[in-house]
Length: 210
Image (cartoon, one colour):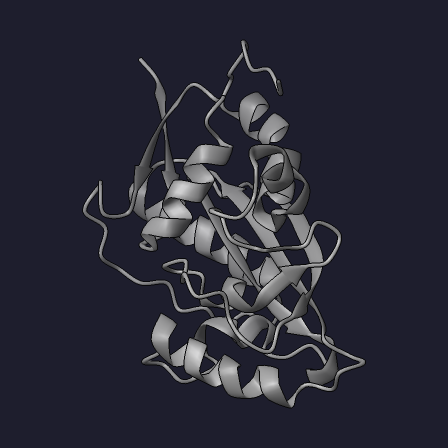
């Protein structure tokens, strides 16, 4: 019988992405919706790591399951790293993909031509019901385009403006080949660093990073 691992998110796009990146681990991956958890975690931390670890610990204790959580954001150089930790709520508590897209359209046009650099950063954490927690970081660099990619990736509005000059593509799952995804996905980088720890802690003896 496979061990359960809770991916502590209600964002379906994020659940699918994390599930894909954990695909070679022999685990039964479940979401908050799958196990009927409706409680929200109030992100009051001052760093990605603080929010990521506290969220994972909150849901591990609530569910009794080892839990994966992450926190991250986009940091725009010309805005002194904003929105950063406030990325999800940059347009207010009632934030939606559409509202963020509309705000980013204005921001993108106002950025200086010589400084459109931005970073996606994340911290992914594994927490156990006994209170132990482990984390890994990932980040990628790109530039903000003046106009978004026409096709919006649900749950990831900022990616429609995030361009990867080295490969001439937007940061969008439909744009990237599998190998490019591994090179340019910030969450993949973090999860790849965390996977050996997950395998060891959960006793997955036949784990391979292939």
